[in-house]
Length: 148
Image 1 (cartoon, rainbow, N blue to C red):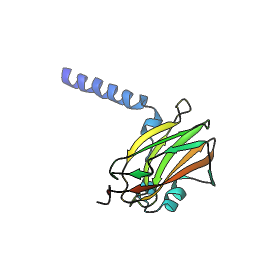
Image 2: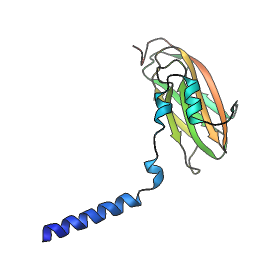
Image 3: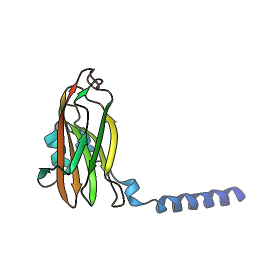
């Protein structure tokens, strides 16, 4: 009898813990965007509306990446009410390399190391206040990353 009671109590605590998890922790992954094979498909899957090139979005990435397997990328912005930051590499087999959803309390700056298969344009899209802003830069890769 004690074993059944313990199992019931354990089940109740587990159920309560699962219900207490915030919904944003269980957010769904945009699989179609991560599986897309070109940037136009990624943009169509993730965003609605026009994307404006903006000097308020700063994309810091090297002009020449000595090793395409580890290319440092930093994106920051002076925009307020930032909802998400996405990073795409035009010539990668899967162009969407990173996507970050931010809370209103977050500092709108991300740093990540990405893989690049070949020289390409790196583009970031920042969604802020319901509008889309971008910055991009050509990066030359001397040693391949995700392509070899």
